Amino acid sequence: MTFQVTVAPSGRQFSCDADETILAAALRAGVGLPYGCKNGACGSCKGKVIAGQVTHGSHQQKALSDTEEAQGAALFCCAVPHSDVNIEIREIQGSEEFPLKKMPSRIAKMEKLSEDVMLIALQLPANERLQYRAGQYIEFMLKDGKRRSYSMANAPHIDGQITLHLRHMPGGVFTDQVFSSMKERDILRFEGPQGSFFLREDTEKPIILLASGTGFAPIKALMEHLIDLQSTRPVTLYWGGRRPQDLYMHVLCQEWASSLSNFNYVPVISDALPEDLWSGRSGFVHQAVMADYADLSGYQVYACGAPIVVDSAKRDFIAQCQLPADEFYADSFTSEADLQGA
Image (cartoon, rainbow, N blue to C red):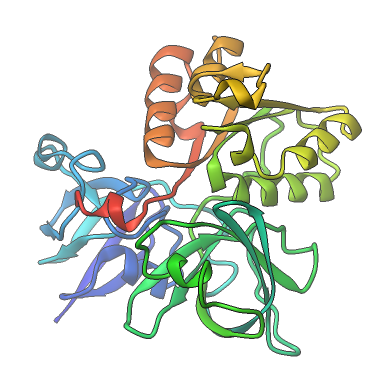
């Protein structure tokens, strides 16, 4: 059985199978709904059901509470229709520009950026190129049918390879392999590009970039894209880690700060030890932003990293710093451990 989905305010329509999520059907139809994790954890795809009925698969309460659901809110990544439905959500213009592709790739380089972060460079087949927007991610398709998502750490214009920054999650199905048995020239299959985290170019608003840990990967891609555009928009990057070594490309950020007149870099460390000899900013990275910018009403924020950092930043920037809710763009890095609460 197939149902019709109508999107407000655009009026666009697409069909959705009875056992298919509304987001999956939208992506199949080339309709640009916002999304991130696709598994009910981040809340990026949240909207309203105006008419019709849906049921939700497993999801986290912080992404969609029972109260919100009772008021008509829905997470379209895990909402399945039971009738024709009318939904309300802001579509992402241009997100359907680059269609999803499944591709093989060969590991061209593996380089440890820190004790627990590995750079992997993927070489695509000859005469093949993945078109994507800086900030998007790919999903590796593992042999057991599982998938693992990683943001691309380079802007598409940089070179023919795709680079990723992978943090080792001990016990992780994929990253345990990365840090033990995986080697250069191995073949990995992936599907991409994914996600609606990319630069909005229809404004000249100043930008706050907020990264925690390997959330720096898509932020780096955004910066490379801004540099390529020769953008004059003021940009401030806040990069947070527990220890200084977590800021594994600190030198690159310092180089940007010294060479770009419109760019500032603020590294923030939360758990420095005496032997780290850290003399910079300390504490939670999103609170450093709030200390510097009491009024974010005229800004855009792009935030990436651990869910607690992204969630706290969104909540506090909107409630305390007057950031417009629709000017907060995020990619929350949900791990398998995070999803156990779904």
